[in-house]
Length: 150
Length: 150
DNA sequence: GAGACATATTTGCCTTGACAAATATATATC
DNA sequence: GATATATATTTGTCAAGGCAAATATGTCTC
Image (cartoon, rainbow over all chains, first blue to last red; front, side):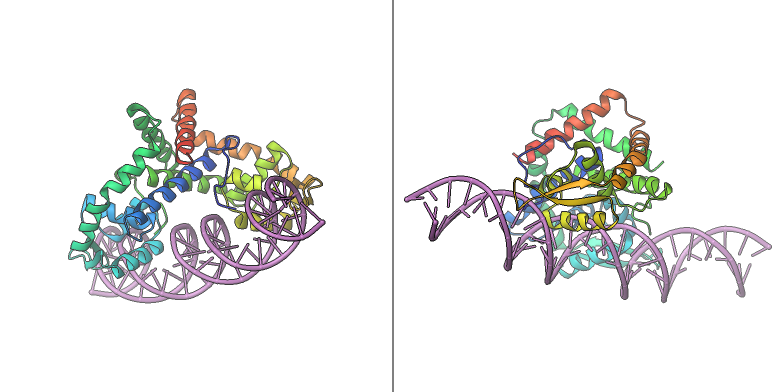
């Protein structure tokens, strides 16, 4: 039986579950699109690369917070991406505890190639929502997140 | 470093990540509320019990689809909840492959006790959203889910 | 400047949940 | 009614990620 092997049953009734369902379908869709480009990367790995490409080099802690991961998870994520040659750990000259994570040339190229994938998937997913509705959705979620974090 | 040890940084920029962040904060909040009631249950376990309480006995497959889990995950979830005495696997008289999962008296009592927890957490989380906004949020998410499942 | 405390990363351990194979039963076709 | 196919559950295996402890470095206070 597949994780979402449904013939579209009753509504889930719970925002928590609904969020999880939507996220896992998005993850599935994006990973499939990426795989069709011949690239073998998981959702979190792609998000990490995208973040670095968009915002430039940052510390491991910053990246972890942006992705919603703890430090341990991030260490291992970096191991994998460094192994594949997409990024580099450099010492932070200001703070010898910290790292400066930066994309390699290969990582930057990959991000350029993959930029379209994310956009296609996100557009397809939200194709039943208008421009304003998409904005509202993000806005609502961010307000909930802010509330939950006090 | 804690999973969401943030001082509320820049917006996540990605719906996929945002969904994950909101969900994990919701999970954290609900599990904490539940633990404060002296009950040791994880988010998924609570959702399974709630679903059974609301909709009555159902098969393992139905429950799995409602929660967005695959069959294997559900088997182990049922093991844990049966072990704790909150539910029972009965054979389905119509279909000898299938199970009929039903709450025990203890499970029903627990659900009554816990009903307030979920409501409190969900209300707190959405306290910055009006009635209409809450409806829209669910509606948008359900439309995206439907689209992604074609 | 010594000690106390905070922060950044790494590592070990563990739980959750996905995927696939195995098993049992149901349903459809000839 | 025998065979092929579909569905329900269970089990094995694995990877992702959370939490806590370890380590290194920074900052603050006296």
